[in-house]
Length: 374
Image (cartoon, rainbow, N blue to C red; front, side):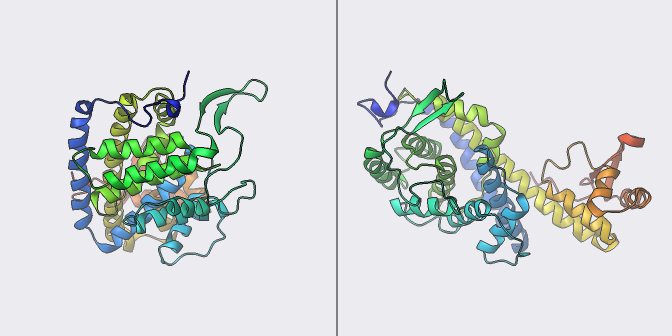
């Protein structure tokens, strides 16, 4: 059976545009909604939102590839590359690299896509790597670029990319297509254009390593360029939560030029990423309101714990904050933890559920007016 790039009609894809109309309309509505919300929040909240989403996306995109990064290191590096104050902690090379790339994608969204764009991203992403033969250029090895699983004795080949010898010409064709259609709203809808761009990049698989993260960075750039404004999306976060389905959707196009399954999956996940972003914006605004309301009433321990709880983001502490969590975070006694938590409940900063060892505490958003903005 031929791989998709071996088909004589490659890369002339087949798909039913009518299946994407509803998703496209919702995507455009959400895009306007996000831009509108951001335009009405304080500059400091915008900065916090930018840091939060870029950190989230860097951590999630790496997590999809099985690379676990410390959120604190990534966030510190994001702040540094945005020219903001940091705590000067020592940052691992991989965290610094992906952080630099994410900031570059965001700040330089309007720069014309070129081979050099990908080369620079690859250099950033491969920061500190000594096991990669070619960094900052397309792969050049003779061996097939394969995606495999299973043991070494009986590997299963899920996909084989075009040989290195044709990668440069494939990328040339791809970049020309991208530049010709980035401003063309008649031939491709948003979802079609960005979905095809991501798919083609992953099919070519032009680098020795990092293709998944680079392909998802391309999604962010393409959306921002199409909207003509730097956007903040949670695409990698949503894909991380649906990793198996993501790979299955990509693999559905390994042999066939019909990409209906991929585009439907991609469109739905782009919408989910927008919805997640909207919730994150609401969360960050609520966090600001929370500390404006309660900061003067908090002791040092309570402030430290609450900041740590908010670091968990929208999901929060799994099952809620316990007294044991509180003790661990601020290094205090059981009696002090219990007293501090009771005080937080009494001022309506936290709500309490359960009894005895099952007691859990949650941030009380209900008394913050307009927390749920939509």
